[in-house]
Each structure stands twice: as C-alpha cells, then as structure tokens.
Length: 100
Image (cartoon, rainbow, N blue to C red):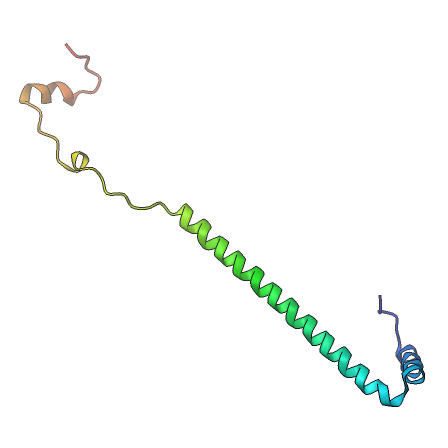
C-alpha cells in the first residue's frame, strides 16, 4: 500500500498536517498517535501470549490423554503356571500333533 511513497510525498503530507493543525497541536497529535500505537502493540502481544498459553495447555492435555496410565497386572497373570505332567509334556512338545 505504501510501497511507492517517496520523500517528496512524505514531505507534502507533513506540510499539510502542519497547515491543518498548527505547530502547537502537532506534538500533541504525535504523542497521542504514539500512545495509540504502543497500546495496540501491547494488546497484540497479550493476545498472542494468551493464544500461545492456550496452545501449550491443549498440547499438555492431548499428551496426557495419549499417554496410557500404568495399570498393575492382576495376580493371576503374574503367578507362574503349574508344570504339566510328564505325559502331557511329551504331547505338547509337538505343535503339529493332534490330540488323542
């Protein structure tokens, strides 16, 4: 938008502002413009930080939901199974053998 503004255009705008507002009012307008600009920047920074905080919180919630909780195994799964009898052991050694 303001890519083609040169020094002469800026000088022309400054002269018009000086004629419209006068030398006494110009510094006051400059201060007001500066305050407005700084408040705008501050508001934009606040919004960005709130957005970043919301993103971090959402990521924490998402990672907490994705991480499985450790559940202790039931005692029946942690105990060793009894050893099979010798006749059963011979039959179970060959997985291709059909039961009698």
